[in-house]
Length: 209
Image (cartoon, rainbow, N blue to C red; front, side):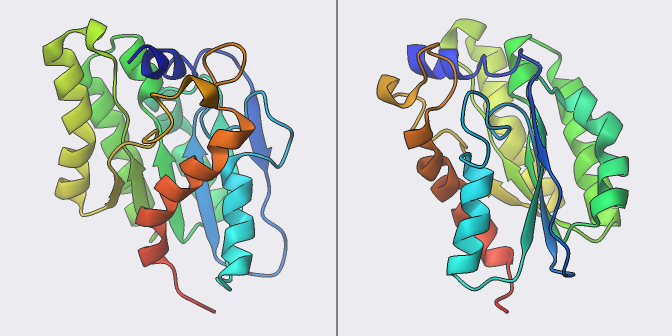
């Protein structure tokens, strides 16, 4: 649990991992998250989203990946910029990995829910399918808040009929060896596990080609 708590702090440093989709007209997968997806402390091109692009090629899925993740992002920030990102990249799929920072700051669950709903609905209006990456908080935030935060993701996925990663950090959060020296951010070795967690929900939405 200590490792999980530390990892969830991955939100507060303003580092962005953003690259544009290559030309060619391939459908876009938009990764829209915080430092867990923004390659914080990693070599460029070494995070799970970059590994996703490689796996897509290996599996012969004709998709490109745009990583529009920003370290420190909250659901409020994401909701404010989702429309522009959708307009710019016109994704076929949005991988929505936000909310951890809201929880760390103890923000109202209703506000987090409303912001995630706004992003899901905006993506749907833009004809993009959504994968919602669930997050969890350590128990020191109190049972009521922690449980409410955990179930928020499943409730939203059910209501909006989106794909769901139940806990994006599954297999990572409880292993100190999978953290960088700061005890906060996932290591290079953790990235394939994050990819595997994402892939389980993402792969069924993709069309081979």
